[in-house]
Image (cartoon, rainbow, N blue to C red; front, top):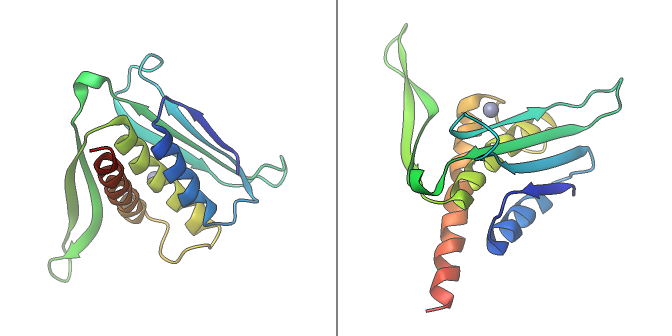
Length: 158
Ligand SMILES: [Zn+2]
């Protein structure tokens, strides 16, 4: 698995990401890159991109995840649509989940889960539809999982 980390993440978080990705077939994954962009971008927040395979160029899935949140900006507000709700025959509304990203690791877990969803759904390794709302849900699922691990590993040292 070509996991490239250009951010100073805790070893527990790196182990979590590796374990999470190792559950899947990553033969067609060219790379999965994580960047801390604090000093390299004027954009603040988290963003990413999952490029699909290119047969002509013989390239597989290429995933980039970026976080640019300074220490003082945590907790960082996180509000993403996780679905839609039908109101009547013609109208619907977004369903949001509001949360807070408290650490760099939490931000990375969220965006990694989101981008991984696009790869895994496109390569038919998981069910669902390749929609942003579903990718956002996957991001929150990874975030929740990471929080549980972080909570228990903190507890171990007390
Ligand atoms: Zn997306």
